Length: 132
Image (tube, rainbow, N blue to C red; front, top):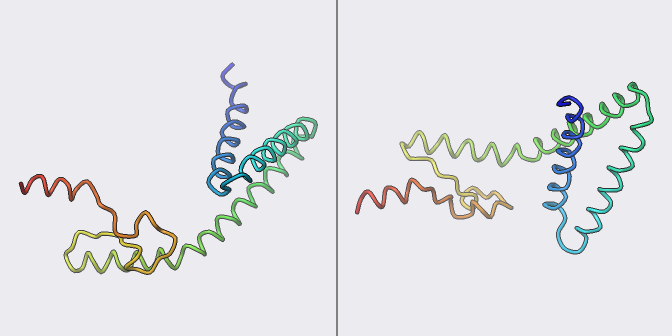
């Protein structure tokens, strides 16, 4: 009984991940259309895969994995420069004996609004409370 439910869990997990990613990437009125398209793609691929041989299913899985690997490699290449800048800043702060703090504005890293003025950690709040 447990083993028969595993494929459905994988399918639901994959659907959840795909829907969450689309919700993050697509904003506004286009999100609803994207979700409908995603549902039809998943429904169609499930219907198509149910009637195919194991060899075809494995080939389709290999293609999907290959696409995912290429997308991840592209993301790594795009993130290499800002990650390298952050690493060098971190190491410089450690050499100065500071408690390292990331500030994307200071480093010139774009599209990192959460970190724009440095992350205000709970440790700073604890230090202020301890000093009082």
